[in-house]
Amino acid sequence: MEEADQGAVRPDSIPEIGEDAVTSVTVSPSIPTLTEEEQEELREELLRVEDEILTLSQVLATKENQLADIKRKLGITPLNELKQNLSKSWQEVTTSTAYKKTSEGLSVAGQKATAAFNNMGSAISRKFEDVRNTPTFKSFEEKVETLKVKMSPAASQGDFGDVLTSTATSDPSVVVEKQPEATPIALQEEHLQ
Image (cartoon, rainbow, N blue to C red):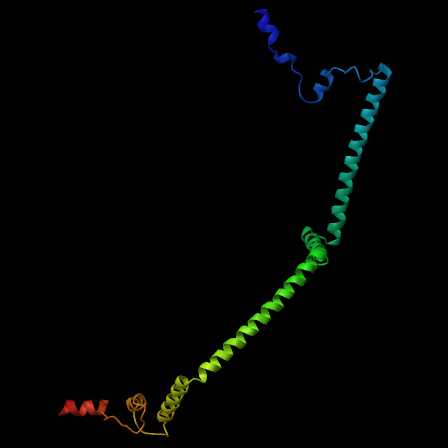
């Protein structure tokens, strides 16, 4: 049973992690051992440095409070500071060479896109002009013009059906027989008979 106890690690022999672990570490032979007097001097210096750190932390906290007080009196709010920081950051970005190169590249791309759209618009306009000059379109345009003339009140007293029929036959001189229209008065007369 003693062999089992010797191989097992007992919990009280494991050094703790943290400040107590430093005291449980054995000094390696390569580090010269300090005398009692030197150790005492180092402990005093350690206490003095820790005290200075504590004092500096307190001074910093006081200065931060003083700064916040001054800003509050001046009306500088965290939102104003954020706006100033964003403005400053944006200014730094816009003056950077990367931003300038990107901006120039986008400007050139925009100019090329504008030129491409202008060329495309010109091509479409030319195509519409070509279509407008075709005989089919000219014929259609003439028929619409004829329809427009016939529909104007001063041009003729015919009804819309006459105009459509004469336009459909492409011979404006052909008149289709006109059917009498039923008006409300004519309907009343028929009803009374």
